[in-house]
Length: 174
Image (cartoon, rainbow, N blue to C red; front, side, top):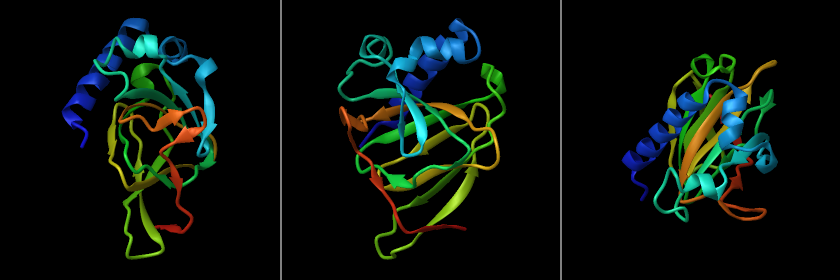
């Protein structure tokens, strides 16, 4: 079980570094290079390089820090079986547009074939904890999106193209 206090401590270190670097995407790209970006489950994700990661965590095999950029529309609804993620939404306080994305979320219910997702707006400087087996995805109506970084333990990325990520096919939004 991941220690959420440690996730918060690491998140605070990243936020402090972002304040030192300045606002906006230029500052963020110093921690999450564009070269590491890929599309995964319908959103853009960038990984903090291991050389930087070791400045924020003591055991780099047990953590990853990622930048998530949501896109207009619906991401894939998915679940992680091991990784716990603490998201911190970057909005106007950090030089980004006001977030316009909802997190769709529900605990996985194995007794039903259809998962019932609830909408939770992502707010500037808001925290969201997603524990293992919590079904989730992102929905951005119209244009816009949101930026957030997440401290994840254990890592969801196990290797090139190998992720702790399972798509959920049957779901509704309540």
